[in-house]
Image (cartoon, rainbow, N blue to C red; front, side, top):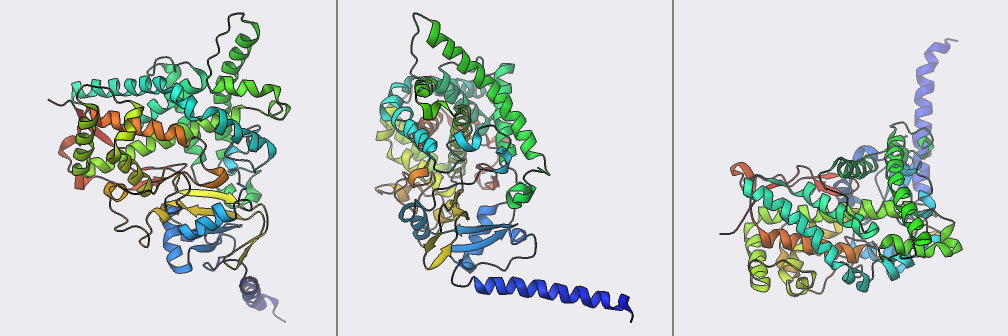
Length: 498
């Protein structure tokens, strides 16, 4: 018998058996997992995703529905693409969807899985951290007490922009607002400035934070194939860990200095900043047994990037829609007057500015995908979702749902005037900061920071595009990472009125 002639037929038979097993598995899951495209061997449905996963998910949902199963590598993933399904996941079954997977990029960061606010499952310690954030760090009273600090940091931003206006030079809006946001967070946590924003040490700190965001936002094979996590084939974990350790060294120094001051100084002056709040908890055994640095890491990464990204998108939309910018500047002039500095308390009297921020968050949520993990077996709309399943809520798609929003792709702040829809997690057609027990705890601070920065930039300057560029020439495409940023950084020329 010629065994060599049998080899091709053997391979064909094995391939057919493999396909039949996949089909059988798919059929046996019918009525259990939600529908979705048939997965290829090994890669699953990864080839159906573009570099903008949020847009790919939205396109697939048109075929497979608002509750969809995808196989991303070896990870079974449920994608939620409607406000109705989001409410089922984030509110009605919040307990079952309270988990969250930790990105492989942070596997090497000590204590991150147990002590951050973003990564761990809802443990006793995680609940303790949330309670501290909600009752002591981001309370209305504490934020109001610190509003002078934010005013000063935003004034530094205005001064920086003013220098460019005198020179007729364009400003990189994203970089300028990122620096301002980072300085604000640093001062809020430690009650000190990042020295001179233009100094080498300040630049190094900004570079470290930026590199952590870039690495953690990069597509990582280890997230799609957990078996690869120990190998770290793209070295993303290695690089992220190195950058985080540099940041932790700075945190260690600041924490040690404060501890020493609190324990030895007879005239210690309590700063009542976030670091004092955290150090107050060290008498609590549950808190003292964990590392506070991962929480500080979350504050810097989330607090700086989401605010600056939102302001950059808002400015881009206003430059692209000059009539909207003119309405906003007219409202600011009527409410505040010429030559006066914008105060946080002014926001309540600026409904059109608030509508601009809401419309920006609807079209360009800073975090377009919300990740969850099931903590129990759970049934949704007749489908059974097993424990430890990854769940993604496509916030970007919900904000552009034509069944909810008229002309959903257009920038129309007027749609929010006189509307009660808000982004505090109760209106599921509009959840840019999430909802439920894992809603962004820094939302109150982000609200104040974004409105103050945007109002100050609009009130202090008129703006135009550089090099004779027309609004229709603007590149409004996005790039997908840890946040959804403009693909081309926004550069605009500030001009003084008169």
